[in-house]
Length: 386
Length: 146
Picture 1: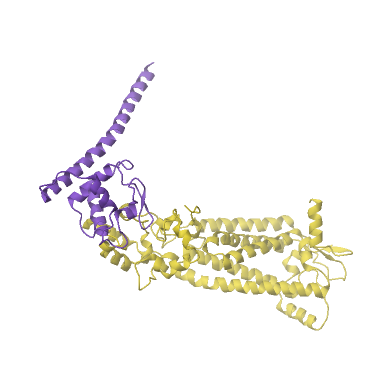
Picture 2 (picture 1 turned 90 degrees about the vertical axis):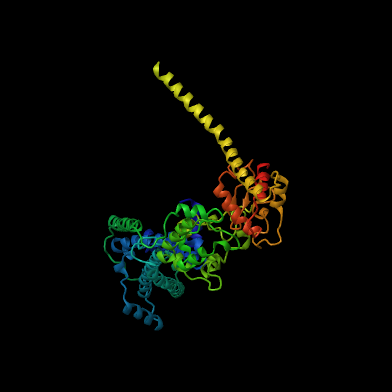
């Protein structure tokens, strides 16, 4: 490590004066700060980021269970204070610890104290629940991810209702965790944050020694990496499984040709059958223009295609939301509350860009508009103003 | 020595075929357009026995006019096609329209069913009525001059 970096770390995380003991191995420290980073990214993109930040949100959501699995390997087979059996989850011990604090009895723990240990397990459990509810939401809304073949919109939407409350619960737990670190640091006259950076704590005052079980580094690494590998295979396989309720991937050629000469050919999933019927019922007055086909057979064919693939026939976020029309203006996609909510943050000047071509030109920004999927990852807003 | 001869013959044949196809493409369009114009000329003559010929100038003012009864969304032909038919146009929904001028889009006005469809629709939108054969012929003649 370069001397200047070393000096910087020493300044941020000063070593305890006097003799010190190794407490946190590098695996625990790397896990802790990587998790901090991932949770920060997930929280920032989730609470503030909107749909365009979803890719980054998912990346953080994938990294978090990977980190936790690796930590479990270290927790089962790693060294000293990293091991789960050095800080068993015990509500009774945690209460006793709090009781001791209240009574002014100072008891030193080099590893996690019993209250902190309980918080560690609770935070990991809540994190995993957040990951699971997010994965279910992804399946329900976009028919993506490992649950895509067995979680539909209704279930996914219901579970999504838990995702954000759980995230707020985690925020509260993190606040409690930080308060605990601050409180214990002050009480014990030691810098616990610095200890999580350099890994050492002062040898005095004496504390119960670490568990004397031998670390098995290869087993720790192997079990963690193996578990990540197995999970990756399962997730990849499940994510490639066929999902029901998807709109037709490709538009009917005749429909796309006839309707696509004036406007982007909208996927039939973007309106319920009643709207398609009403719209096709008066093509002479089609959003202010005459769009009549002049060929009854062709008209019937296009109407049949639209009705057979309308919003009722798919099971995605877009299809469900597109069934909720504005009663005063049921024909217009841009009049739906969902459209307005999703596009509310986009300034009018973006729609005025020549390459965007207005609010009705979906595929200027949604590369997958014609498939009716409208996945957040396929959004690309043309930047140039001309 | 057999192969090169055969090869050169093949190449020669393919080359002349390609050249013929390229040369044939433009006259085909012109012939198809002439047939459509003849179709409208016959109709114009039937409507008005004094009909002589189509006028590009009349087609131009028809293209640029803002008829009083136009639908608000489509006040004139040039509203979507721009005032210069050699430019690309744009539909209200943001789709590009290839230039109407024959010099830019040689395939314009070469398929009667398509010509009929769009005259029917767009005359209703801009002029709120069917256009006359005279007006359609003028329009095509104007675009052919551009």
